[in-house]
Every structure is written in structure tokens, then in C-alpha cells.
Amino acid sequence: MEVMGDTSKLEQVWRPVDGTDKYYLGQLVKTAADGTGGDGVVVATTASGAADTSNKQIIEGVINGFNDVTPTYEDGSDVTGFNGQELEGVVTQTDINARNWFGQEGMWSKGDPSPMAEVFLIDSATWIKASLFATSFGTAPALLTSTAGNANGLTVTTNACDFTPVTDGRQTIYARTGANATQYRVTDDNSTTVATWDRAMRATTAATGETYVRVPLQQGWSFMNIDTEGLYVEVDDTPATNYFLVYVRELNLKEAGKEFVVFRFAPLHFDELRA
Image (cartoon, rainbow, N blue to C red; front, side):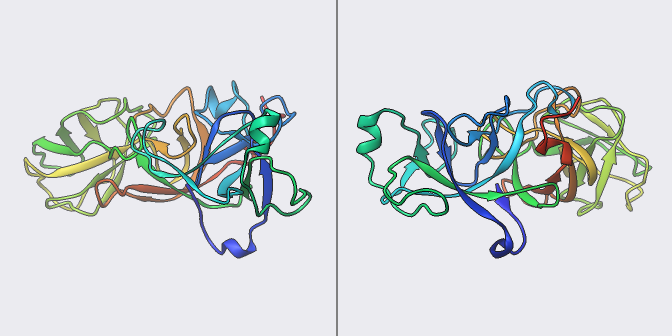
């Protein structure tokens, strides 16, 4: 994930990482759900319950760097498809003293060898750009090919999308090729193969063979979920039951493998005191 805007004006803080988990550049992190914070930041993970009311994760920020002298990189063995800088937490005296570290600032001593991450602190006004993937990092949303034309610009039949839609209009379809190319519409059906919407696309007849992409997000207030490592937004989750509440500024579904969303979290995700 990537913090948008003039990052020179955003507050950054050095934070120890909790436990022996692995942490990654661009990862969303949180304070521990019990409010104690553990020994440092914790990996933000998939939401559970409406607006994450089961987990009550307290979002803190996005990792921007580590205090390793020599960077190490994930090769896809722990996070399928991901290749990026990583830091592994250590807690024993032997492992702490074996580290080659530098760089932490703020309240932390230069002589403290603890593994730390530099974190962009975010709040409900911070815009975040995140990739849209299905099932694993780097897996693009399913390309949907029209198998039946329509004469009203209000529906299309395709192969199955990555998620089960809901009827209250919480998902978006994008026409990538064909007579309706470049148009976005909010869909309001519950079918994985027959998408319907209320505002017609410009072409009166959608032809067989046109391609589309469909994701469980919409511009404006939207439901959204992330992967278990806090690295991307999942498009194979149904927008009901388990989700974060976010405001979506932009969806970009133009290019396969490069689909992304720009969003900000609702204020409640920064406070444990919620229903």
C-alpha cells in the first residue's frame, strides 16, 4: 500500500515490531486489538464482522522503511507473488544482539538494536493507494468476457467474477473493450455471471466478446477487505458481513494486473471504542 499526497507533510514515527512476525515495506499496521500495543506495531489483517467489529483493529499506519543496515527481501516463499523489502521480528537477547542496525530516531536510542519500522501515521483524512488482487498478491481480477449481447445497455452476461455480488449496489463493473469501453457502472444484482445496473451504458447493443472487470467496491462510501498480510485489497471477498468501512475516491480498472483503489478509512477504525 502507498500513502498518497505530499508525504513530506505526514508524520512518521519509528516503531518496534511486535513478536517474531515478518513485516513488509508498504504493509498496513495496527495497534494490538486489546489496546496494549504489544511490543510494537502489529500486522493489520482481514476484517471480521461489519466494520471490523469482531477484530476491532486500530489502524496505525503504513510501513515506509526498516532499521536494517543491509536490506533483506521476500522472495515469494512466505507471501505468494510478493517481492519486496522485509524485516523479521526477533525477541531473544542472542537474536537482538546479532542484528546489524541503524537509523531509528525519535525516542529510541541509536544504540538499541531492536528491529524497528518507520511508519507513516495515518488517520481518517489520509488517502491510501492499494492494489486490487484476487486470491494472492499479483493475481489480477478475473477478466470477464461477454457471452451474450444486450440491447439496452443495462446488463451483460459473462463468465463468473471473483466474488458473490449483493443487491444493494456495492460493486463496480468496468467495460475494458468493446463499444462501451472505458465506462464504469455500479451493479445491483447478486449474480456472478449476469451483471445489471440502473444507468445505461452509451452503446445500445453490447456485443459478444467484449471484456469487463468487476470488483466489490464502489466510489463513495464502500465496504472493503484486505489480505491477511495487509498488503493489498481483496477482490474475491463478498461486500457483506466482513469488511472495513472506507471512502473510495478512485477506482482504476483499466489495465490487467495494475488495478488499484484510492481510499481512506472511516474514523471508527482508529478507535477501539465502537459497537
